[in-house]
Amino acid sequence: MIRIEQLTKVFGTGDDATVVLDHLDFSVAAGEIFAVVGPSGAGKSTLAQCVSLLERPTSGSVVVNGETLSRLSEKQLRVARRRIGTIFQSDGLFGRRTAAANIALPLEYLGVTAAESRRRVA
Image (tube, rainbow, N blue to C red; front, side, top):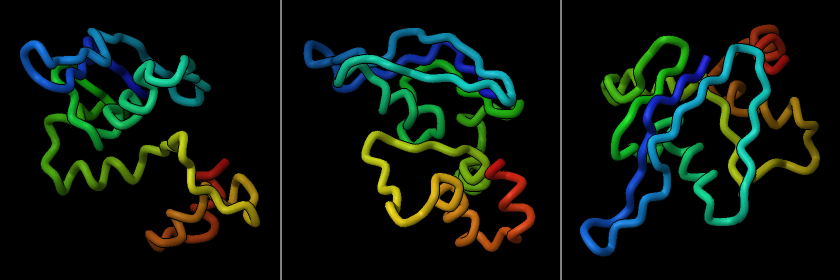
């Protein structure tokens, strides 16, 4: 489950500040499919980066499976990120692999068993 509460991201300061995400609220239930759509520059990639805290939000909270990510130590955050799948606009997918095989690739590098990998990809 993902819950976003009052998520705001501002780049720059003062007169040069640009608000990219402005007090955004939404939740995605386990197993639910959720899409973020919009024109180029609308903040979709920034949102995706904030969900995994690859980009720190200016304010608000990101809760994934009951964990408030901004409260985690760097070590805990690295572990939490392994449970969050994100495919960005510049995806870097391998054309000779199926979609499932592309999703499983990082699990292979992490040493996840083939059975567990199949379960998680499904």
